[in-house]
Length: 129
Image (tube, rainbow, N blue to C red):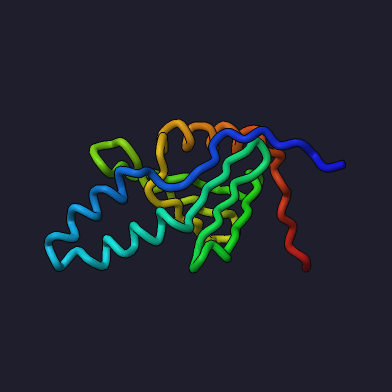
């Protein structure tokens, strides 16, 4: 029997990101941004629980990244779409970064992650001599 996880947020990127980028496609120079937004809308999914953050994405949604809260060092957010959605960069203690693009309710989610980081057991890193 596995450990139960309480889901805080599960879903894809904000629909406004797709709508805005489709409208920008009428200016031919923004077509690559539109293609990116369509790919995100089709295959990118976020799942934030009380134990971890899971991002499924990539071509046809085949890539998956899982991060537990004790591995997170810092969370930085940037508002987009008049503040309706935003991007989030999660920096891990080993220096790697996980980007979450067009996250709905990004301020609430970032606050939730910050709370979980404070409550996560701190893993003591020891260097072998």
